Image (tube, helix red, strand yellow):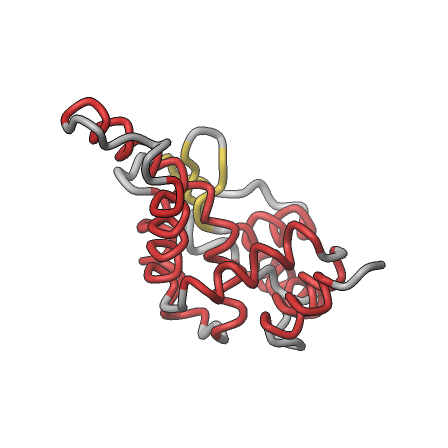
Amino acid sequence: PMMEDKELQELAEDIREKGQFEPISICDDMILDGRNRSAACLIAGVEPVTIGVNPRDPVAYVLSLNLHRRHLTPSQGSMCAARARAYYDEQAKERQQVRKGEQSGASVENLPHLETGKARDAAGKAFGVSGKSVDYATRVIEKGIPELAKAVDAGRMAVSTAATVASETP
């Protein structure tokens, strides 16, 4: 999750006074690591220092740099996993295509439940949460209002509770 406004302002002030010590990692014109630093540089009016990276597995790269130092709650980890789920879904589709070409009878049509489940579980494993929690978070993101996702991201609501609320009619 992004820093709260007060923390972001403090980081901006620190960067304005002392400079930016850690570069922002960029891959394919996207920030992989350093969203808060980038926002703080913008606030501080400082040109951000960036470094180009091209990791084999961008999700693993981001997790390696951030997961253990961020001290996320399980609900926050589930929200992160749900946002990374598209990457794991794409990997699952690629694996399905490889299997389809190498094994007779192994096709997407024959295994639709495994493709989604494996991606969900892989995303959950990467973030240290269950596949079911990833499903809850996906429901919050897809069906809930933005404030609901923000509450989970900020640690103010459990993802399971938010998923229940997201399932209610408006």
